[in-house]
Length: 571
Image 1 (cartoon, rainbow, N blue to C red):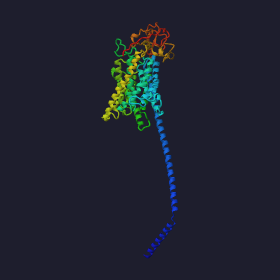
Image 2 (tube, one colour):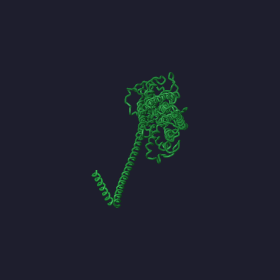
Image 3 (cartoon, rainbow, N blue to C red):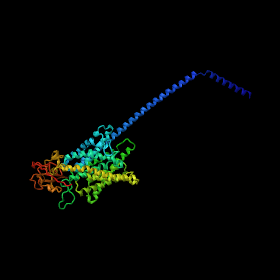
Image 4 (cartoon, rainbow, N blue to C red):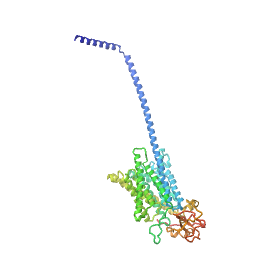
């Protein structure tokens, strides 16, 4: 016990001695030195951290700028590529219009289809973009005339909107084909593309547009593009009147409906329809106006898929209705099918971003049925629309605009609330506004041109064809098909029962008109006075045509000056 106590005592003494020694050696200078060293080390570490943070922020800002530039470039690329695809619609309209007119007017309709694009681009560049998309109020914009002071990042969207606007004027050109005077295309194309359509698009698509603020919804333009252009086509074709022979009183034993005037190339119509479908896919995909935001890819996918489904529904509906309903033809019609497909696409535009696939097919079916009804209505009203612009675009667009509030995911069939009902009411209001706006513009334009006597070409020029008389450029010149021997010609006279009777005595050209069949093609030719029997052959056939009084054979003296005939056309 004593030994343990002594050991503890020794340990305590040693610890006390060690503490006393350390305390005696402690001084302030050593403490200050150590503190300074610690502070210096902290400063170095702090500076290192600050430098690291600065470098990290610089890298972050660089990545941010790079991502923003990539996003901007992606959107620009998206606009440019899809706009180029959309421009294929212009080619499609041109081919369809060419195929649906007679060969004697092929060059004329090609020229007019191209004029629509060029005049529309210039007009939209000068005035249209400023009215539609620049700063302004709920009705009109007033900045960036001719793209003045327009930010470079806005050019791609402006390019897209410029191509969009060409559709309105192009559809009108087909409705008045083969009789509208060429200068009138410049007039109405400039006004519709530069003023009428841009104002309407601002109301329905601009964030501050009064229709959009009310709740109007038209994703791809069933109303703003197709209904507007279809209404313009109806007004124009009504004021100018039908082509000669289209609705003349029927002969004995003939049906009471109008005389059908066939186009010259169904393959061109088919090619044009396929180009239109291709262009429509870009047309609706670009309507999202962005590719870089979350969810954009899904919406673009829906838009393109539903466009094709709508075309399919419209095409088959029109085909079957025409085949199985006797009062609509009772035959399989390729032309009816492709027109129904375009009507189905026009219908699905309004809600193609949010329709379920089955709803897109149903919308296309409604568009195809509306097209058939609209075509029958024009026939009853004796309105001549060679390319069915009104039945396809107005009737199809109206069916889509009014059905979208029911069929979209937020529509009446799914929500049954006040918001969905308001959407339908806004669609009804928008339809009325679109129709009235088109009539307000087109009725004065075409009425004034008619009063001035420049709306329609003279009757003899209409019968002779404008390619030879007005353009001196034949689409199918004799050198391209003329044969030395006519031994293969079938001399069976087909007759010209849709030729207006009151015009057959107007000139030596119409008096000597004969129609002949060569294989499966119709050849028309004027022949010399010696051709008095069905078996007589003309001295020379210069053009393959459905009706062509202007391309004459070598044996006919055509030195007689063509006189201008004043034509009276009822509204």
